[in-house]
Amino acid sequence: MSSRLRIFAALLAAVLLGVGGFFWTRAADRGTSSPADSSDRAGAAARPLPASGTPVRGMPPNPTTGNVYAAAGPGMLSAAVRGDRSLVYVPNTRSDDVWVIDPTKYKVVAKFPGGPEPQHVVPSYDMRTLYVASSRAPNGGVIPVNPRTGRPGKFVNLRDVYNLYFTPDGKQAIVVAEAYQRLDFYDPTTWRRARSVRFPQCAGINHMDYSADGRIMLFSCEFANRMLVLDTATLRKLREFRLTETADGMPQDTRLTPDGRHFLVADMRANGVYVFDGQATRQIRFIRTGRGAHGIYFSRDGQRGFVTNRDAGTITVLDMATLKPTSTWRIPGGSPDMGGLSADGKVLWLSGRYDDEVYAVSTRDGRLLARIPVGRGPHGLCVWPQPGRYSLGHTANIR
Image (tube, rainbow, N blue to C red; front, side, top):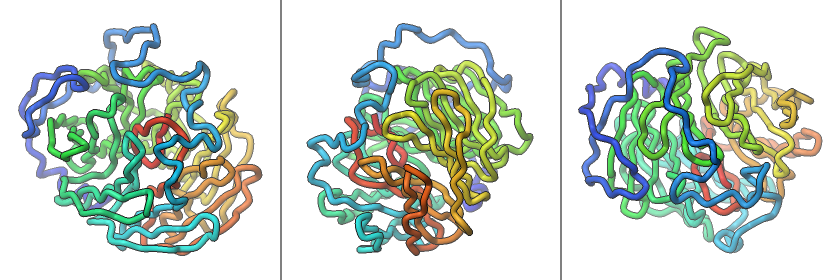
C-alpha cells in the first residue's frame, strides 16, 4: 500500500459535479470529480434515512428476515455458477500474478499474470465473471476470468483498481481508487467510466459494505483513521466518524452482520473490531480481537463471525448473537489476511500476506488443514463457486 501513498501529494482538487440517482440515470462517459462535504465533525448530523426497510431501487429484496445472507447458505449454488470449476484464486501483490489452487487436493494447478499489483479477485454482480483487480499507480485495471474454465481474458486498463464493488442494482461497477481518494463508476459491460466522486478527507478509501436495505454505504478510510457514510443513490456524504480506540488507526474490512443490525470494521492498529449500528449512525462499541485485525467473514448459518488478525497469526471467532469472542484459532508462524469460505462453509481459506502462503482452516474447530506456498504477497483470494444470488463485490460479499 505504501506505493500508493507517494501520489497523494499530487492529487488535484476536483470540480463540483451535481449528484443524482445513478442507478437509473446514464451519466456522461467522461468521468469528473466532485469533492465531498468537508465537514470534519465525527458523526455529523444528517437527515435520517427511511426506516421502512424497503430496498433501494433495483436491489433484490432479502428472501427472509433475520439474515441478509440467507440466500448464500451452505451449498445453495445458483444455476449461474453450478457448472463452474471449484478453484481458489490467489492474487499476489508483489509477484504480480495469480496462482490457482485445487481445493480438493490443496495443490496449485495454474498460474497467470495478474496485472500491476493484483489486490483482490472479485465476482461480478451476476456471478458469471471473476475480476482480478490490480492497482499499482498510476496504472491498474481488471482481468476477467471465466469461472467455467478458470482461464483469464484480456487485461482492461483502468486506473488504480484497489477494490471493486457493484451498485445494488448491478448496473454500475464501483472502482475504489484508493490512491486518488476516489470512487469511479463504470459500465461493467463496456468499462467506460460514467463518473467519479472524490473524498479528500478519506485518505486510503478502501473497503465498504451496504446496509440491509442498500440505502447507505459505509467506507473505511485506511490512512485517515475514520469511516465515511454515503447515501447510495446520491453519493452525498451523510456523516463521518473519527475512530477513537487509537489515534493512528487503520480501518480495513467493513461488513454488515447477518442480522443486518450492525456493521463491523476491522482495524489493524486498534487490534480489533469497531461495531456500528445497521444504518451507521453511531459507533456502539469496540471488540478487541488481536494484533493486525484485518478480514471479517461469517459462517454460512450466520451464527459466527471470523476475524483474521494478521500480525498475531490468529483468527478470532465471534458469537454473532452477542458479538463476543468465543475462541481463538492460531496459525503458527502465519499471517492470515483475506479470503472466504468454501461453498459448503466447512473450510475458511485465507491468504498468508507476509509468508507467501495460503491457509485452509476447518470452520468446525479451527484445525489447520493445509498451508500452501504461493506467490509473493498474497492478498484478497477468492474461493469459487459461491452460494447466493448476486455479488456486491470484494472477494465474496454475496447476498
